[in-house]
Length: 279
Image (cartoon, rainbow, N blue to C red; front, side, top):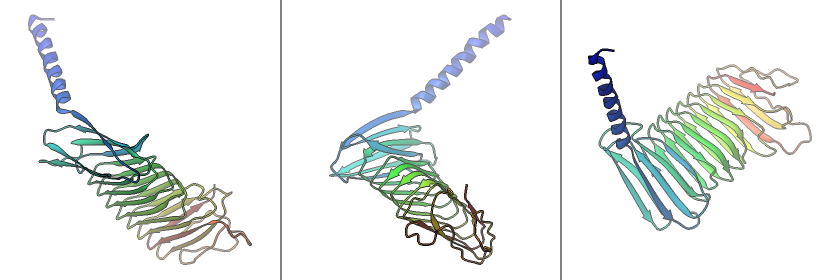
């Protein structure tokens, strides 16, 4: 190695180390704790990054934020049992600040973001989730009222039990896996709606897409009543039925004569295809 190369290597190392140090300095981590009573209201608006909410083991709301830009400012307010959190920024971006929040399990939670990912896990109270282009991921929700809205962002619901669901997206795909509830309504303008799992003995399921497909997969052991209709699309049900089933017909499937219990599905699509599977 020449004398010149020996001098250049340490200089390069110093530059890399300096850049890493600057990157680490740009991250600002903060934590706030609030004590609330039963049925507290927690509202979070973050248009500059993701929001993650999980249950707290006590009556405290624990807020952890990580900012990645000096342009971001945080507004935290407590009004009795109501907590309001929101981010502000002098420039646009989807990865400027991250929120991770623990809330009491019975809290009323409202989360809003433009294109950041919203994640809600393990909650039991009323939950409202709204995003524009960002995705929404919900897992392990029980005995709750869940309201979800997106424009183009996809929606994923997994392990939702005994809950009332009201799900709407303009063009995002909606995926439901292991979802049961007395009332489940899903509507997407052009996105795919898929349902997979056992709906349980009692439930009303309304899945509607204007131009997107509907994919429904229910175990052979589940008793269900299904009415499916696609005006201009096609249907290719794999369910065993005695008579034919066309895109412009309504069919009732798998509810045995004399059976008074069984979840009921109504599948509607104007232009999309309806796929029914019975694995």
